[in-house]
Image 1 (cartoon, rainbow, N blue to C red):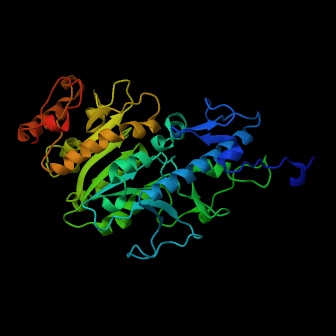
Image 2: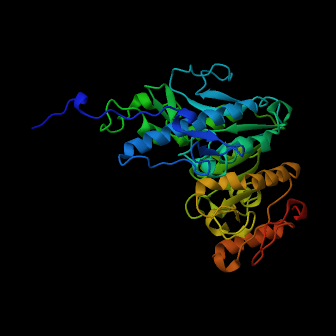
Image 3: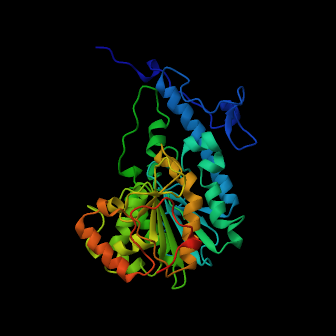
Length: 400
């Protein structure tokens, strides 16, 4: 029997988190390109040993994370470490103890509105899609352009606050004293290359944020709730699983949150009317289901142009529209957020507005049709239609 000592095994490869040393540069149009070939972007496969490819990609991802984090902080977003030690929002978890970072704009106490984003559980904080960062630019594929759309040039002069939750980085990596995604966990340094990922234990759990579901609940109850007052409105943007559980939480606690929620936007909706939503309450104007139908929208993969109406009400409980992206769900947010913000602004300005119910009658069972007919007869502004080519502009839609 042969026994290999660690000294006999190949070392784990190492790549510095430095663009120049990795052989890349940022172009004038904000794209990351190879220094020796300005037309080529990041190259993943550099070695037949995939561990080299994984470590090289992680070094590049770390470079992008640092760049994006600095740009977002320059806009007035600050890193908050969850959980809080008390209810004052002053005593955060020490930086060397298990915590998950989120981004909160500095104008949170005085803002009239709060826009909250719950991303996908595979995303790093402030990153929508690394593929969009590579193909379309750093600001485009990250939350930088979106934050500018919400806050303007600076959070200090904006009446809308921004909270970017962190559903992806909920694993505490003890060796580096930071919260990481599953992908970063698997790429972390090992004593030797052939070793597998480190085993997880209770030491890798973050109190109150042990997974992305707990993190969403903690964000609602300990980050947003303490700042609420009767005049403050909250807009929710949820992506994939982040949006699905945000809806689940709101539906369970709708009596508490109903006075504050202004509108809901979803990217790649995963909620199901057959499982997740109580469609029997659709005719009750005070119910969460009725709110989602009238002041909720979803953006889906489609070859149609951004804002084109898509079938999906029966499955998701709200009108669906083309996101401008047809292949990758993680690329929905970079393309659809301008339309999302335009619509959320309109909802804020018109608290009485109810989204038109756009659905094909042949796609709905008789029970749902009957409920919708009762709803539309009550709401003068909403209507049933066989089809609609494009989402109506906010200025063209009649409110209820």
